[in-house]
Image (cartoon, rainbow, N blue to C red; front, side, top):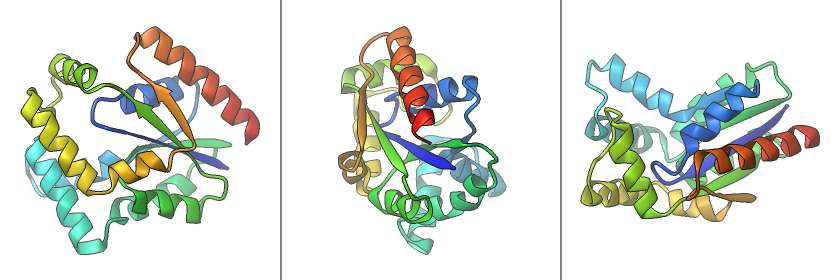
Length: 182
C-alpha cells in the first residue's frame, strides 16, 4: 500500500483534495476526525476553540505526534493500493508516517492568505474563524504544532489560488501519477 499525505494551512484546500480523492475511489483518513471525535466524546460543541484546545491537550499528553499515531491503525486497515491522509499539522506527524509507511509522499497545498480567508468566510463550518485576526491566530496555533516545518518537508507542491476546476484537474492528474507509482 502506498500512503500519501496532504498538508496545508487552514482553508488551503485539504478537504477539497480529499473529496477529489474519494471520488476517484481513494480511501481517506482524516486526522481532524480524531480531534472532532475527542471533542464530541467530551460533550463539547465543535468550535474552533474546543478543537484547538483538544488538539493541544492530546499533543501535550502524548507528544506532538499523538494524532498521527492514533491514525496509523486506521490507515493500515484500508484494503487499497493508495490511501490518503488528510490534515497533517506538523513535522512530528510526517516522521510517524514516513516510519510506518515506506515511500510515504507529502503533498503541500499552497494558497494565499486572502484566498483562504475568503473561503473561510464562505464555507461557515462550525470551527471556522471569520476574520483576518482569527485566521492569523489559527495559523500561529497550527504553526506552533510544526505545520510550517511540515510544509517544508513536502515532496510535491500544488498551488490552489485558482478555480476549483483547475485544482480538481491538478489533483486528479497527481493522484493518477501517484497511483501508477504505487
